[in-house]
Amino acid sequence: MSTPFDRVIRGTLVTTNAILRDGYVAVRGDVIAAIGQGAPPPADETIDHGDRLILPGLVDGHMHTSSSTGWPGIESASRSAAAGGVTTCCDMPYDVPVPVTDAAILADKVGWVERTSHVDMALYGTITKTGGVDAIAELAAAGISAFKLSTYEYDAVRFPRIDHPTMLAAFREIAKTGLPCAIHNEDQELVEKLTEQARAAGRTDPIMHCRTRPPLAESMADLEIFEMALETGAHVHIAHSSIARGFELAEQYRAMGATTTGEACIQYLCMTEDDLIRLKGFGKCNPPFRTAAEVERMWQALVADKIAYVSTDHAPWPIARKQFDDIFACGAGLTGLQSFAPLMFTLLEERGLSPTLMATYCAERSAQLHGIWPRKGALRVGSDADLVVLEQGDFTFDQACIVDRPEMQWSAYHGRKMRARVAATWQRGKMIWDGVSVLSQPGDGRFVRRG
Ligand SMILES: [Zn+2]
Image (tube, rainbow, N blue to C red; front, top):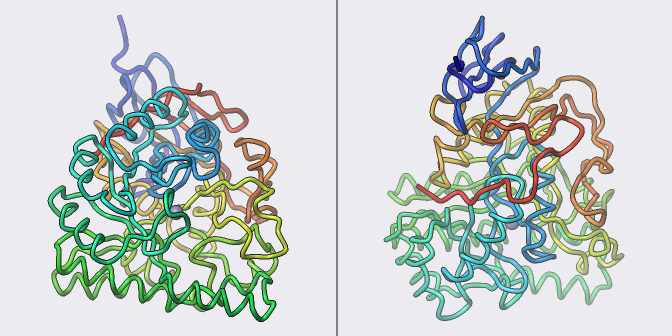
């Protein structure tokens, strides 16, 4: 006689609205078949995590596996995700040598995900600098979870600035698909002029990264994309707001009838300009860290439920790209997948906030925006059995623990005190991280279509 469940996983369950001690998740096949408290039902196997916390596997709504390495980066970044309790990655389209700008390129990338990823992955699509609007419908039909466009140009091919008329036309097409469009929000002219002036003055030290990308560079970009959202009906989403004002603007445009949202990356909930001075290139990301007072305003926005979700913007540049004395020469982006769960738990606990907010903002909400909820990001019957298990205690984050390639073993959070570590990760009912080793194989991850 077979038992009704393949596996029962016991621990303290943390959902978006409750903490259930002495709880269990019963798994049949890939999915959660029952959830409860007290004596667990019979199963082929019972795993007891004791009083450790079991949350939905995190859904990182914003990350870049392939900006520096191309698609081979999917394998190593997703290995780091598995070790970090991130069971679904929503990967950005700005890959080398080609960004994801049509259905054929998307199909190639999906092949890489299915052959090499350790965790499940939803994918963004984007458009070419000119003439790309025609591919919007086919990208949506092929299952991308969101579009991503930029007001700022890093590279004319990989990461172009989309001019206003093209962006307007793109938003009109994207509105027909119903998909959200995330925007990299920085004003090109302002940043370029301030950078040129800093260079002319011989100032290339770390703080100049903040000074040349002031809050106004963000809010100006926010305004133009939100005006176009109001005009076109497209869901326009700030890909990363480092300032609370971005969420206020999104709220004001929603009150006018637009569909506008904004996302915070975890670094904007804890890092400040002083950290950039300390970390130099290893603290460089766009937008830059702000002041301690702004970090407080960000938390006020989060607690007031003005933030769509919290992501990492994980962008693993090799160490060599972060070590220049000239801050402008360093790659922009932080590693964040392995520190995400411990850090979010720690930040919440330091502020006396409940870990249920982690289930909300790092799993449920990101999965909802990407159209993959409740299959992903939920502790519910019928959802994929994706779980992150946290052990509470006094830990110190060590960048040597990062299981990405050796040249990506660095972290802005190296040496930070953490109140938890990831003791296990479960993906679709299978343990893929046991607290020491990644147990998954390349190709165990799957492409997750929107809808
Ligand atoms: Zn990004």
